[in-house]
Length: 220
Ligand code: DX5
Ligand code: ZN
Image (cartoon, rainbow, N blue to C red; front, side):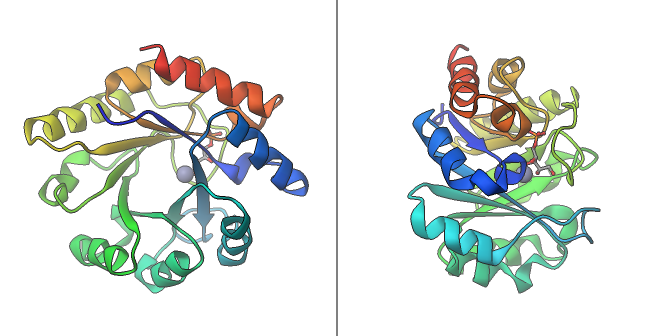
């Protein structure tokens, strides 16, 4: 089984205290920083982008897990890679040439993640599994933090894990949306190894929340 990793989404952080909160998630054991980019077009919300990533990646030595919820990701991928993205995830619903976008990310020196929205069957990715470094299964509609986990996501996760095992692929499967200490265990049990959590990490005791979610993940 691939390594279990928690990727706190800084979308839910207090931006006036970003440095202190990022220190807390790292002390709590988080290994990835999940960076949600929204363009107000692919999703009905706007978050942050390149300048924020550039400042953060300069001073934080962790894996920057950039989730592009944007139309026309090819246009911006090279800049995100330059500004410090280690993993660049785009949405299958946002591109015409899935294989081409994966290749572009690799040419830019980053790992390629591909994400599916709740209504998109994960099987659309099966022809590309050998090229993909990480699959991101959305367990809420992308666009906002703080929504409830869609239970049907569990079947998608286990179907994908089964397909990857059948092919001998040690795929990273990340799940994003509505995850906290109370359901982290079942998401890992279904076959995910990287969990994103926003509000469950940044509401209250940030370090303590990070530790509790990681403990729940490991208690499978
Ligand atoms: C949703 C984002 C998520 C979000 C997760 O569009 O992709 O990463 O911040 O937030 P929670 O954990 O609060 O659902
Ligand atoms: Zn995300």
